[in-house]
Image (tube, rainbow, N blue to C red; front, top):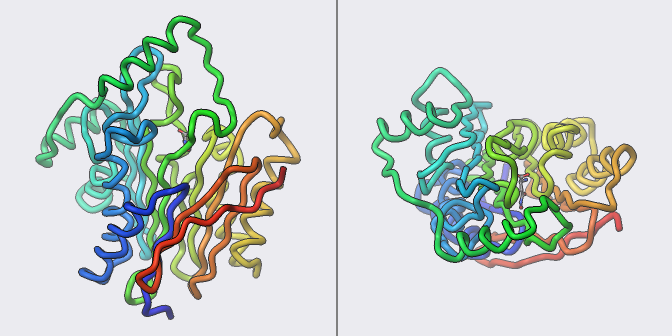
Length: 288
Ligand code: SD4
C-alpha cells in the first residue's frame, strides 16, 4: 500500500499533475485526481492536442477522444465527440451513469448535453489558422515529435493506494474525419488493474491500438516485470513489427508500490510526476 498519493502524466504537464495531486489530497481518490489533471490541458487553448484549442481534422472539426478507468475495473470512454470542453468528464459520466463503456459522436454529444455539459466551439483562431495553412498542401504526415504529440495520459495512486488512469486528446492533427485513435481504447491508451498497476500511452495511436500497449504492459507487470521493463517490452513489440523509424509511441507505467517506468521509440518523450508535494519533468529513455 502506498498512502502517499502519486500522479504521473505524459509529456510536460506540471499544471495538470499538480491539479490532480491537489485533488487527491482533497478527496483521497485517484480517480478524481486523473480527471482533474486532464481538465488542465482540456481547457487550455494553447494546448493544440487536447480539448479546447485542439487542432481540427482535415474538414475543420475538432473531434475528441478520452477514457478513464478506476481501481474496480470500471471504465468509460468517449470517441469522436465534438463541442464539449471536458471529454474526460463525459467518459466518467458514461462509466458511472450508463450501462455502457463507450459512446461515440452524436450519441455521445446528446448524452453529454443531457448530463448538463455545455456545448461550445472548440476551434480557436490559432488552430483554425494552422488548419488553413495545412490545407494549402493537405498532406497527412504524422511526423515524430514535430507536431508536439502531447495528448495527456495520466496514472495515479490515491490515498488508499488504489489506482486510476485517464487519457484525453483531440487526436492526430488533420486526421480523416471520423478517425478515432487509441486514446479512448481501454487497454490501448489506458489500462489499470488494482492487483498490479497501470499504464498509459501517447504517440501515433494506430500502433498503440495494433499492439494494445497499455493492457500488454499491465500483463507484463503481472508476470513480474518492473514498470520500466514492461514499458520497454511493449515498445519492442512495435519495433519488431512496424516501421518504427517513422513515428513516435511513448508509454508510462506505475505499479502498486509506486515504482514508475517510461519508454518511447524516439528520443524526446518526457513525463511529469508529482509526489511528496514535488513536481518534476523527467526525460524518458528511448529505443532510438
Ligand atoms: C492519437 N495517441 O490520437 C493520440 C495522439 C497523441 O500526443 O498521443 N498525441 O493517436
